[in-house]
Image (cartoon, rainbow, N blue to C red; front, side):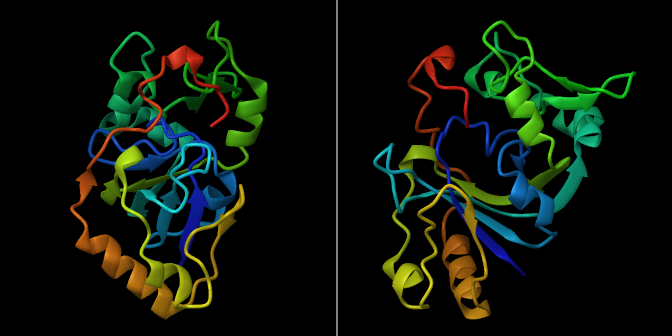
Amino acid sequence: MTLFSYIVRYDVGFAPNPFHGFCSLATCKQDIRRVAQLGDWVVGTGSRTNAKAGDLVFAMRISEIVDFDHYWQDARFAAKRPNLRGSRMQQFGDNIYHHGADGQWIQENSRHSRDDGSPEARHMQRDTKSERVLLGQEFVYFGGDGPAIPEYLRNDFGFDLVHDRPAYRNGFRDEHIAATVDWLRSLDPGIQGRPHDWPRSIRSIERAA
């Protein structure tokens, strides 16, 4: 089992998307999406910008991995398709990529599109570096209301669970992973809070998750 830790710079319910019964990581963090395997854990912590550094945003155990086309076509994930005229949950749907009949990528009007709904090439190029979507049914999502990561998970194993850079951290020892999973499973599962950045308008949040 591998554990990945990273900072959730923009917490809008998009990456990760914890809604509709699955926590999904379908955009951004292409390096994690490329290498993570079934049974691995992904932990996201808050950013200094949000004054949430060291707080838990979400954690999920990967129970399924699909590609973008499967994600788009699977009826289980239709509710995760974005609708910018719908509720906030719909506006930040992360089911945004699939191939067209010509084999080219389609990027749905979404968090990662331009304001006029046209594709944003910068996001598309980065997001599609890995076509893998990570899905977890065992997860906890706190958004902006998460607890601080316990000090023993930061200092007692010689390797801080909280990463302090934009990439990700892994390489945790088995005993550190076991202690982290025990703590995560002691928390109430599922959605426990709202995304930190939801109070702002959808169009006023920088599109660079």
